[in-house]
Length: 333
Image (cartoon, rainbow, N blue to C red):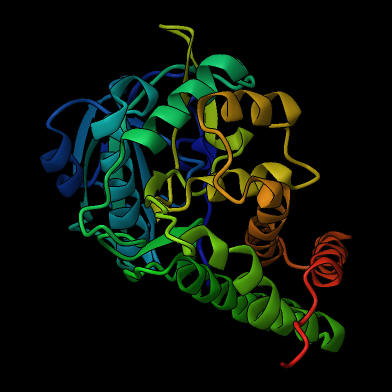
């Protein structure tokens, strides 16, 4: 999937500091009807054709995408909208999405309120309390796991069709990311064999019990890509804020899978604070292993987004070997 990236100075060479006028597509103006702050670094902007000049302002933010842009931008809009309904202070208000009228190649956009942010780690206490509140209050419109529209993790289309069985849903999600990761980084026999055992043996033993023996697993709305680059501090309120969501209704613990990745800064204080608000699902003794399992998907996403990244594939294989040793195939009766 190829995309063009532009910095502010490439689009507006003499911009210097923030200020001045610039051109926008009429479709964006029709969606916003207010002045915009454009996130030029978001994805792509070189395809925007001059059609209207308005003053630079800090009212709204925009992201743009070309190839696969409709799914990306609509998916992000609906993701952010569902989160905003539950936690307005925690999420910028989504304003719209659509297609540029004058753009080649075809380009789609997403608009939301612009929030002046500080890119520091949010306070674990308030951050995890707000996140747990979203997880606990959210209600799947179908009562199933999945989402109302196709959406993307970054630029990766994720499998999110409705499913009543969480183990089945997560298996399909993991397998779809594995296929793309193999296409991106190449074949590795040991790696692929281990994944087959994870799917056929480990997932049934780790996720099956969540909905067995009379247990009911609530589908919770998750952000879907919640790491330090998608969270910040609102300078006006000093409260945490999150953005760039790839949401769906999932087991709430899935959200924490990305925090387990070695490079992620949401460490033990965040896990501890989250668990104070949302205790582990039963069986409690499998909580850490479930988080390890969920982290596989986020490490796969990293390898797709950053092909050839050192050591991550090895980390994935090590985690799979650990889980396979702990949850081996059951002997035939």
